[in-house]
Image (cartoon, rainbow, N blue to C red; front, side, top):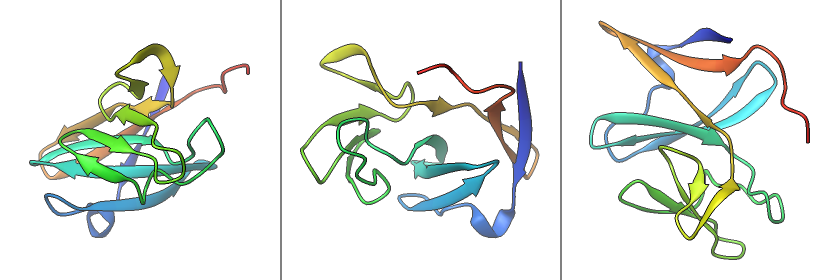
Length: 108
């Protein structure tokens, strides 16, 4: 089960932009791709580099450290299904935008 936390309007990125959020102990990169919000963990699983500063092509972000690419919608690498970062569901209700955080942490 997830818990939903409202993202303040001032923290929402404009179309084509991104912002870094600290939500519930998570560092989350929030992207606005053509008016759709996507949220993923900010830390690349390979060496921990920030994905917030990655190169964005469509809805795929490329880590600047070693070139790994992640689909913002799923968090998965397009070339390696099952490997990636956590993607967070985004819900909108009118002008309000919410991010779904897991109720419990996943085991590593």
